[in-house]
Length: 104
Image (cartoon, rainbow, N blue to C red; front, side, top):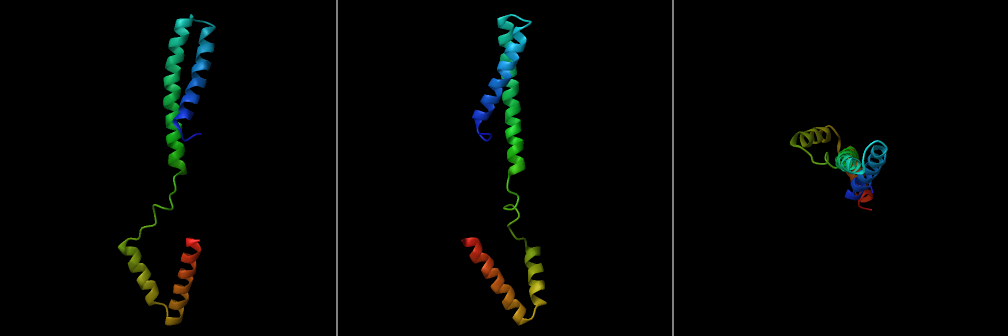
C-alpha cells in the first residue's frame, strides 16, 4: 500500500480529519474546513516525500553494479594470467556452475 497514490490520500485524509476536529473546538466550521484543506495538502505532499524516500532506500543497488568496465576486464585478465592451466580450468568450471545455478 505504501507504494501507491492511495497511501497519499489515506495519510492526507487522516491529517485532514485530525486538523478539522482539533480546529473545530476553537473555530467556526468554515475556518476549520479551510484549515483541514490546508492540512490535507500538507499531509499529501508529506506522504509523497515519504514514499519517495522509501523507494530510494529500498531500490536494488546490486543491479546497478553489474556492468563491467574496461579496468575490470584488465584486472580479470591479469588474474587469469597468473594461474596455471589446471587452475584456469577449475575457475572456468566454477563460473559455469554459478551461471547454471543463477538460471534456475
